[in-house]
Length: 296
Ligand code: ADP
Ligand code: MG
Image (tube, rainbow, N blue to C red):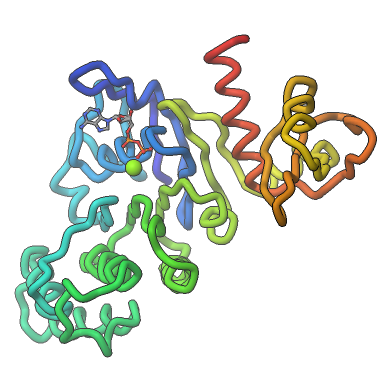
């Protein structure tokens, strides 16, 4: 279990990136969902020992991650949001090099490990290609290969699917889901579908605060029967609804606005009850936080 207690972080200049985050993260895939600026990368960097919090603690079982950085690094695999590669090196050369840096000095052991990881991440046929010529998805799969070098117990991947096309994203999510349930994999993302597809547990954070923690299915069940949808033709009608009801989201569907409203009973004519989805959970939590912060 990864146990995070009351982490706070204020950057020089005054941005309060984390305002007291506490989380219990069990082994398996865990989704950390939040909009840009929520504090996801700050939290990931603290867990990856690259940044010190102002207060709070993080323990993986009995290991204090913040106090024991060297030990933590030995059981950590980290794919940062800005993952740079040496463009003129081939995948196999850079991965071997990184393996040496990780302390895997035995040649044959290293060869076996590196080749295995290239196969696991589906990069075997591309192993001699220069990383500079890799697509976004290939680069991210390479990022997973390097994160797996130390056979980590804790894997942290920060916004890995941003910028991937749908096929690359799918392939990448499949790779992540294959990493096993015996270790802890934290996936930070602003893409609700990433979490829906992969994570039995999740948290939503925004403005450095925890909004929700739990199983996506439980969060969906809590909204059951309270999500209503209607297609409106005009912007005026949309505005009228927004002033009257708690509009969770609007989507353009074939040029018209599909409006989703949160209400205990039908908001009125033309509304149909619809199944809640994780995006409803996400937007509802964000809008409730916005209201709490900015009362109107
Ligand atoms: P996320 O990854 O969820 O987008 P971040 O953790 O990157 O969020 O950022 C949280 C907040 O902290 C944002 O307001 C961001 O602008 C600010 N921030 C991030 N890094 C720094 C930094 N090095 N110096 C000052 N402010 C920062
Ligand atoms: Mg980030």
